[in-house]
Length: 277
Image (cartoon, rainbow, N blue to C red; front, side):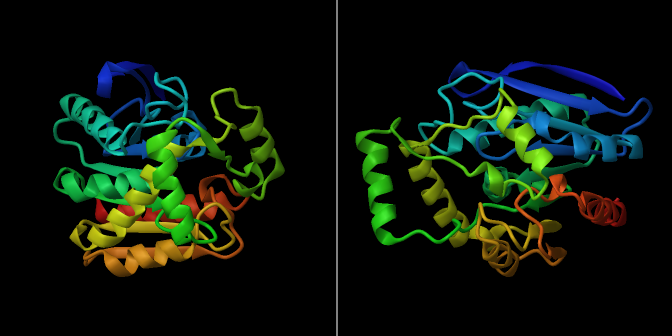
């Protein structure tokens, strides 16, 4: 496979890092990776190594404030900075591949970003795969937490509130250790502004998800402790897509592409894509 990386100008003229992996000959479709909170697109090599040999190109970016991209860590002034940057990146991909179908692959917060992106730009995509999408917060969010999140988002936007639990990423200890040891993974606390923006974004998605009509596959681990698995079912029930599929993997943790049984998930995604190509 051929690998390329570099930077492009994102929102606020920030330098946004991207990577792409392409098959040696031909490209039947593009998978656009939209990664989750605190991580980066380089953590999706299981997806890359599975799909590039099958003739897919895989493109990914590090969100602003993540990985190798510029910006204060895990902070945005508004959630649209993620979707606006994704649109800029999509347009660059389209210049290179004007006629190749593109499937968005969003994980966790990337699933939330991807779903909100669909509300505005689904006509540009052939379909979407959402993995453990952040639709409902794990443990629920009380009205008090919502109020405090909004208050701190305004008064102290860069104060740290809480950190993700690395143990909830995967049931594979090696994956957890690699996550903790990865210098591009942010292990500090999430900023108040981002927490407030996440709450508002999930509320918007819940209210507007019926606008989504394109082919959609949702994959979700039943033992996910980082997002509420019920959110996947809520999203599945709410979207208006005629072609929609929800697959729940019993006992799987949050990152279904990084579980010991990931071959099953990758095979299911492969079959779903093949049927639509």
